[in-house]
Image (tube, rainbow, N blue to C red; front, top):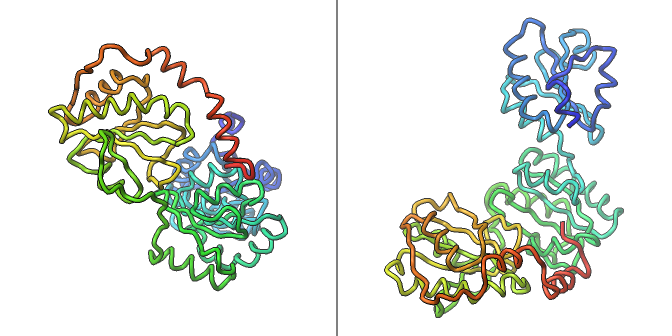
Amino acid sequence: MIKQSLPAVSEVTKDTLEEFKKADKVVLVAYLDAADKASSEVFNKAAEALRDNYPFGVSTDASLAEAEGVTAPAVVLYKDFDEGKSVFSAKFDAEAIEKFAKTSATPLIGEIGPETYSDYMSAGLPLAYIFAETEEERKEISEKLKPVAEAQRGVVNFGTIDAKAFGAHAGNLNLKTDKFPAFAIQEVAKNQKFPFDQDKEITLEAIKAFVDDFVGGKVEPSIKSEPIPETQEGPVAVVVAKNYNDIVLDDTKDVLIEFYAPWCGHCKSLAPKYEELGALYAKSEFKDQVVIAKVDATANDVPDEIQGFPTIKLYPAGAKDKAVTYSGARTVEDLIKFIAENGKYKASVVEEVAEETSSAAESATESATETAAETAAEAAKETDHDEL
């Protein structure tokens, strides 16, 4: 709110520069010629796009630019960590300045935790995790791997993570959760995991080779998957990581898929209604056009962003990049309407049983209330470590 109340770009002078540098952990100042309107417009555009992230300043004092070691036009990013400042002196382009800001504002090897995790995810770059149980060990490994992080700056972000507090997150990267220190890379955009062999020692040479191979596309992602079912016996198709693309991304079919967890009480309540839904479509005229599917998202790596269980999405035929997330009542009738309204084939079927097992009101209450069993199961999962 404070940043929004200020102008996108503040005037900076030799008398106010030092104070401006302390306005935040990261600030950007453009040093421009007073007559250079084009560069000023480009910088203002970048500042507007990132005004929620950093304070932006501008100076047209040539002597101040000289004192700061730059020649106009240039942008200096001042920060209270790493080397203290970074300089952008390339051709002024709003996107290039935005990329420079995001890259330079990210610590060379930062700390990954609840306060910073979302920033690393939104950065869009692959994230290399250094898991260690003590602060001393994290610092020691960081110093050891600093040359790798410097060489890959702007390509791969690096961060340490407290394995005692957040060791459970190692499991999300297909690492063992009881063997540290450990190293892994997450391809954020595709949610792919590349764990470094935990039986190998973390050395500069080994990690440099691993990261170089990752950047060069020479490392295959680790895929956690249950075995592909030999046969699909029920009306609901069982999806695992290894057959996900074949079923969910089949471009000829509307696919409704439930992402569930075995310990989730809401998922268990939905199961009989979901089976009924699958049976209705399986014996309808749309049996070859509509698939009702489910996947255990705790046992299989999926490319989808899953915030909670159950999550239900429809992947329409011919538009697999435009999945629609279901947010209605968990009734057979409402799910049929959802498929008919959002699928390519507008497939609607009629329920054979008039009496619903639960009303929409009960379903809404169910969605809002955690069962004691589910709460206990979640607590049991996290007895040793917390998730991010």
